[in-house]
Length: 278
Image (cartoon, rainbow, N blue to C red; front, side):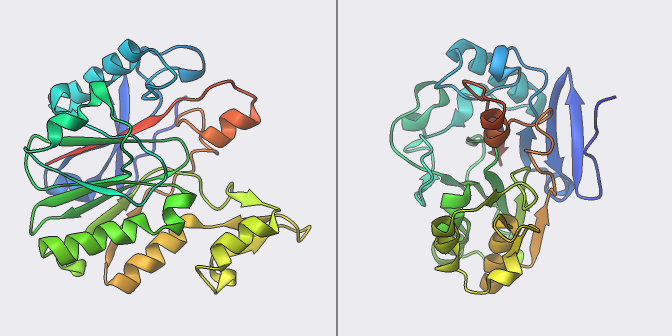
C-alpha cells in the first residue's frame, strides 16, 4: 500500500496518477503550488517516472511531465520559467519584461536559485533531489518566492537573503511572511565524518550543539539544515514557518534523492519540481 503524506500541514494529492504535495496554509490563499513526488510521469529507468532533470533525461519526457503537472494546477506550461540552478545565492525577480528569456524549454546558463514574482501567470519552477525547496508567500502584498536551498545555499543564506529582499525592496513585513519547507534530506540522513565539512557550518553557526549531533561512535555527525533555516528566519522576525517533516532519503521510493541514488550506484537520478504561481 502506497504511503499518504497528508497531515495537519500538507495535502498529498493524486490527480490522474500525478502525485504532489500542497501546503494547506497556501491553499487557504489560493496560491497555485505543488511539490511533486516521483510518480505518474513518463520518464523511464533511473528517472522513473515524474522526472524534471532535463539535462540527463529526454527533453520531451520532461516537457510531457510538466504538461501533466500544469494541467492539474490549471497552469499554462508556456507560462513556466526557470534559469540554471548552481547552489548560488542569486535571486531573480521575474516580470513581464524579462520572463521570456527564462522559458522552461530553453533554460539559459545564467545561475539563479531563487525567484520572486509579483504578477499573475508567471510560474516559477525549481528542482530538488534532497535540497530544500522553500516557498515564501506574503498574503498581504501577494508576492511569492520560490527558492532552492541545498546545504551550499543554506550556508550562503539564500532563504534569508530572499526574505530580506522582499522586506527591503518590496515593502513586506517579516511577520506577514509564510515560509513552507518541502521534502528534503533531514538530519537523520545528512551526515559526515569530515571535520573540514563540519567547519564549514561551525564557521557560520557557533552553537553546534543546537543543530549537530554525533552517532555513538563519536565520529559521524548529523546536521539539521531545516533547524538552521528556521532559526535564521526567526531572527529576521518571520513567525509562520512550516516544515513538511519529510526526508527524501528515507522516502526515496516516493521522492527523488541524490544521496539514495548514489548509495545505490545509480548512473543518474531524477529531480522533483516545486512549481509556484500567483
